[in-house]
Length: 428
Picture 1 (cartoon, rainbow, N blue to C red):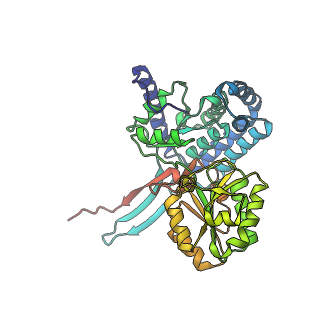
Picture 2 (cartoon, rainbow, N blue to C red):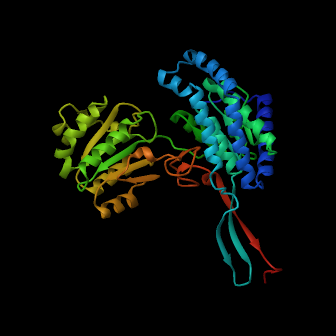
Picture 3 (cartoon, rainbow, N blue to C red):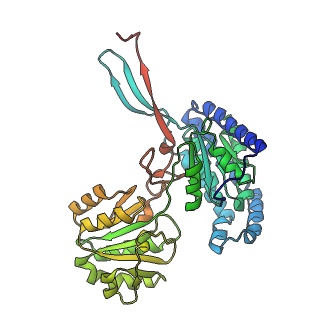
C-alpha cells in the first residue's frame, strides 16, 4: 500500500498534516465531556444521513470500481470495494449498532476510600486522537469513525486510494450529521492528500496523536510500527490453529475445522494450521482431508499426517508459521496436549487458537498456557470478531499485550485516569 521508506520531508505537507492533527486534538478535547446520549444521537443521525445520501455514495463508489483495474485489484478485492444499496444499508446499520452500545466514558473502574478520607476513583476516559491507516473497504471508514466517536475520540482516517471517492463521500455524510448534532465536526477527518508520504508525516506527530492503528497487509503494519512515534495497536499476521484433542467429539472437530478454514479464507481469523492428537489421528485425518479437499484446500503435513493422508504434501519448517490466506493448510500430529501448546506458542501469531475437546481440564490447560489473544474452546476461530463477541463494530484486532488485546471496540479505545476527591486533606 505504501513504500517501505518515505521520501524527503515536504515542509508544506508537514504543515498540512499538522493542521489536520491540531484540529483533531481540539475536537478530542471538546468531545471528551460530551454525554453518551448526545454521541449516540449523532451516530443515529449519521446513519440516517448515509441512507439519505445513498445515490451520491453509489456514484462515488462507481468511480472507484471503474478505476480498480488500473490499480491491479483482484476480483475478490473489487468485490470488497463494491457497494450497492444493500451494502450501503449495511454500513448505516453498522453505525446504528455502535450507537446502541453503552458509553464507556466515565465508567468507574475501581473506587476506594482511603483511611484519610480521600475518595480515589479510576475512571475510563477517551484515548484522544486516533490515526487510522487502513485498506480499501468503504465500510471500514464508517465503522472506524463510529467506534472512535462513540468512545469520545477524534479520528484521522487514511484509507487506500482505491476507495478514495467512496470513503470521502461517506465521511462527508457523517460530518454533516455530526455538525448538525452540535458535536465538533473535526472529530472525524479523512486525509485529503494522495501523497503516500503523508502517512509518515502523521506518524511523527506524537505531540498531537495518541495512537496509530494500521489495518491491512503485514508490510503496511510493519512500516507503521517502525516509523510511529506514538503507540501502535496492531496485529501482524493471523496464523491461527485448531487443535483436535484426544477427547474431542470428532464430528464437532470436523465441523469446526472446515468452518475455521473454509468459511472465508482470506481473513486474519481463518485457521491456517490443524493439530491432531495421535490417539485420534487415524480416525480423524482421512475424513477431514476429504472434507477440506471438497473445498479445494491443499494439505501439507508432517510424516505422520502423510502416512494417513497420501495426497498431502510435505510441510516445510516455514509452513508451520505461514498465514496462507487461501486454500492451503498445514497439518501435524501431536504426541500430547502440551506438545500442541508448545507448537502453537512456537509458530503461532498470538491471534486466535482453538481446542476441540470434551475434557474440561485439557480445555482449561490449553486456554491458560497458549499465548494467544483469543482462545476458543469447541468453537471456530472465525468468532474472533468484535460483532461476534459482543463488542459491536471493531476498529481492528490486537495481538499486543498492552494496551488492548483481541478485537478492539469502544472500550479498547479508552484509557483511564485517577480522579481523587478530598475534603481539604494535606499530606503530612
